[in-house]
Image (cartoon, rainbow, N blue to C red; front, top):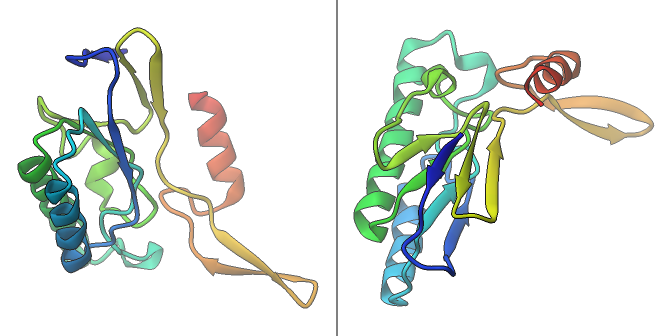
Length: 163
């Protein structure tokens, strides 16, 4: 288990998710956060840097754009907030993020891993999502495909093997 040692006893963690490659919204968020002069010791992104759909992973151009969206988001957050970034890939990410992509000394990909922060906090990461379903007129309808697991059974099996 990796350990991140905060400089202070009390730490401030920024949790965000679902930026979906929206650079304008991310820029506004970062501008607001930096204007507040708040110091964050850690940024936790809970997935969906990009907006690739589950049926688009075979398209190399879509995969590349999704990976670039993730890299752009991480770079912007790291430059503006000057804090380490821990993330769990979501169901709209490039395949590379499930293979430990974007990891460096200040960026931790938490998929299927855990980290300890100080003495009292641990974060466990498990990325992706099963298919999204919606109940309408007593019928379950899939409204988005799961990724990287394409069924609830695959998701459950993968999760059970990890936890």
